[in-house]
Every structure is written in structure tokens, then in C-alpha cells.
Amino acid sequence: MSALVLDAGALIAIDRGDRDMLLRLERAAKDGVEVRTNAMVVAQVWRDSGGRQARLAKALRDVKVRPVSPEEGRQAGQLLAKTGLADAIDATVALLVDPGDHLYTSDPDDLRKLCEGAKNKAVVIDC
Picture (cartoon, rainbow, N blue to C red):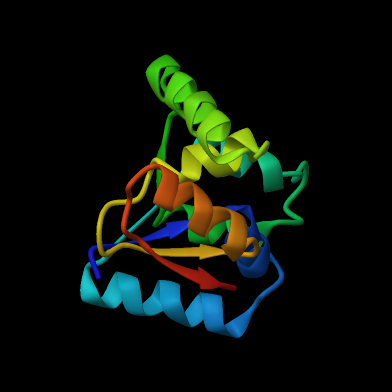
């Protein structure tokens, strides 16, 4: 495995204290495996205004949060047109993965389709 890529469902699982997701992050940190997502995914799940999402905030310290560039925005739109899907943030997540990455998502069917459309051979895992 090259990296762990997290979509909104994975971040929500972390926020809710899902033991399996927390263990995956712990193992990744121990093994030096990169964990990444993008800023729009964080925007989907971040609602904290006073420490209510402390678990998620702590986990995000170890997650590489990438920006979404204008070019990636255009690529995501083209990917949506190609696949017939509509979730722009999911499309940007599909563009984050490299071959061999493990992509954790609560929407595995759409992410598999988007990864295939982007010719990204990630391992898509339902969380």
C-alpha cells in the first residue's frame, strides 16, 4: 500500500470514534504510510466551533490535506461528465489516489467508478 486516502465518510467515521478507522490511522502512522485527503473533504465534515470535533481535529494533524487547484477542478468536472456521476468532491478524491493506495469511503460504488474513469487503480474500501 502506498497511502491511505480518506473521503468524507472516513473522516466522519474518525469523528464518531470508529475503532477500525482509528486503528488504520494508528497503523499508518506507525508504519510511515502517508494519509491524505483534500480541503473540500474537510469542508464537508468540519462543523466545529468549540471543541466538539476534538477527535477529528487530532487525527487531521497527521493527515496531509491537499488544496484543490483550478486544474484539478476542471479534471473533476470532466471525470463527472465521463462517469455520469454528480458529486464533485468525490471526483476530487478519485484524483488524489495513486496506484496501490487504499481509499476509504462510505460510497464505494461511486468511488470505484470514479477511480476507474480516472484510470487510478486504487483499492476502494467501504468504511
